[in-house]
Amino acid sequence: MSWSAGGDRRAFDEIVTRHGPFALRVAARLLPDAALAEDVVQEALVQVWSAARRFDPQRGRFTTWLYRVVVNRCISERRRRQPGPLPEDFDAADCAAGPYEAVEVNERHAVLAAALEALPVHQRAAVTLVYDEGLSGAEAARILGLSAKAVERLLARARQSLRDRLEPERARKES
Amino acid sequence: MLTLKRFRELAESYGGSLRRWPEELRGEAQDLLQVSADARAVLDLARALDLDIENAGAVDDARRRRSGDENTALARLRAGVAARIAAPLPLRHGAGSRLADGHRWLRILRLPIARMAAACACAVAVGLVTGSLSVSGPASDGALTALLQPAPLHFLAD
Image (tube, rainbow over all chains, first blue to last red; front, side):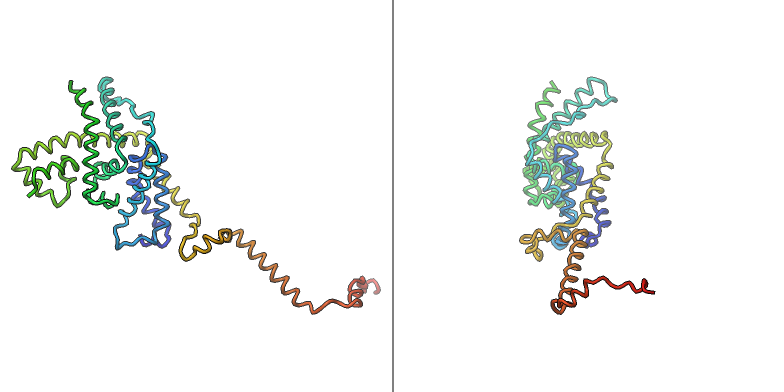
């Protein structure tokens, strides 16, 4: 990191290689399409490069700071946009399953995706960091700039919303 | 000791897998699970939703893998960032803020071609000033006439 702050582009490329996949995954979950997610991550990383000299290691870990820049950019971008339609290949059939199973699985996936898409962006970000990326609540809190308690509440509200959206589907399937 | 109420709150946030729970509470949660059937029921209920969320994540990941561009996206990102940071950084506010705010046109001096042009202009200016200083005064009419006369071609006389 100190190399990078000193303007070493090769060192920064190492940082991009190491942390880019996380940033791209998180951005892809928070934003409606992959191209936009790539653009936002690129902007965030350039911002990190420009501000690297101002990073103070006494105040926290570099990765937390980097992830915070990425997640904040995604949240801002998501707020500026209305959610878009699902991608065309979203419900492509799974050839390994039979036709009836494939339809059922795809319906469920569609409900899940719509339920996650409908979450407010901070709830979605908390779910992504804790459930998809396996970070602890405390780590997610540092990235989101919130208290651990606030993240706990975001997760609880997100799970309640998902349950409300998924329950009718589950009941329909069982009946 | 963790109460069942607090246990339920934690399960409603972090789900049915204790590995997601705050580290400092996992031991107490484990203790409660051993003695409370209610606590075990709470976790079982939470696990069903965990599975849904995990499936949704798996669908996202599978879609990205199907489009085959995880590595390509990273390569594009690296190339894009490298190109962007190779370009000169914008002037920062602070020490250089006066230049950034009041004299934005001076930013052109950061371009190599502009620097060369500025150097040439300076050289011409220095030449003009030096030349004007070396002329002591206006030439007399006689001197001017002599200067304008064609020089004799001595080799023709030989």
